[in-house]
Length: 430
Image (cartoon, rainbow, N blue to C red; front, side, top):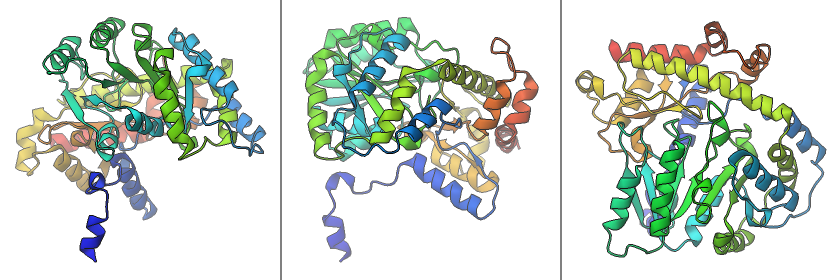
C-alpha cells in the first residue's frame, strides 16, 4: 500500500513539502498556543492593517455574489492600469490587466502557459523555483553575490545568455524588487542596463513589484519604463495594502504579450473561474487611491525605514555582514564572520544555523537555502514585522510626516522586534 501511494503521485511533486514561510509560521503558532514566547522573524506578512477606506468598500460590497469576468472586473482593471500609470510612470491599459487570486497563483499560471526556460536570480522568493519544478519547467539559477548587493548584473546576465547554444530561444527572467528576501532594490541605471540586455536577447521580464509601494523613500522605479514591450508587472494587495489573506493579485501586460494573458485566462476559466466578487470591488478603492491611503503609505514606509535601520545597526555592530534595507521588511544577513564559532556548535549550513537558533532562543528566521542559496552559505532571511502595525501607525500619525521618528518611538512600539535582535546577537557572540 505504501508503494502504491508513492507511484500514484505526480513525479514532479514527490518530495515536495509545504512552503517554508508557511511551515515556520505554523510552527510558531503551535508554540504560541502552548504559551511559549517566540520571536517570529519567519513569515513575511505586512504588520499593518488594511486601510479603512478599503475595508469600508469591502463591507459595502459584501452582498456581491455574481461570477465576475475571468480576467477581472473591468473598473478594477481600469484602476490597476491607472495605478501603474501614476505610480510607475508606465503605459498601462486596462485591456491588458489580469486579476487573479493572489500574484502567487498568477505566477504559477504564467509558468504553466509559457513554453520556455525560467531564469531566476538568487536569493529569490521561496516559491518561484518550486512552482517551476511542479510544472516540470527548466530553471536556470543565476547566483548573485553579497558584494553586488544580491543584484543581478547586466553583464553577468548577458554572459549567461550568450554562452548558450540557442541564444534566442524562449526565456523568461524573474525580477523582484524591493526584494524578498533581501529588502534591497535596483537603481534606475541598473534597470536600464538589464532592460538593454533583455531587449537584445528578446527576454520576457516578469517584474515582481509587490513591494514597490513599500520602498522606504517612496522612490520605486519599474523596469517597465525602460522595457515596456517585454515587461509584465506583478502587483497585488498583500504587501503595500496589508491584505495578504484577501488573495488578490494583478498582472499588467504590454499589448505585445496579450497572447500570454489570454492563455492564462483560458486556464483560469477552467480552474478558479474568477476572483471573489466582494474583494474585487473593494480593491478598486485600493488601486484608485486617496489621500487617506497615501498617508497610510507614508507612515508605513517611515516606520519600516527607521526600524530597518535600527535592526541593521544592531546586527552590523555585532559583526554580521548585511546591507542596509531599502524597501519591504526584510534583511538577508550573512553570518560567515561567525563560521568558526558556529562550527564548534556543529553548525555548518544555513538550515542548521536557523534550527539551532530556534531551539535555543525561540528566535525564528528562514535559512538561505530555501531562497536557493548554497547549503553551506550561512545566510538567512529576517522579516522584521513582529510588532503591532495598528498601534505604530496610530502613534506615527501624531508626529508630523516631514519629521523623522525619534529613537524612543521604535523602542516603545517595536520592543519585541528589538528584543529578538538582542537575543540573536547575544547568541552569536556568546
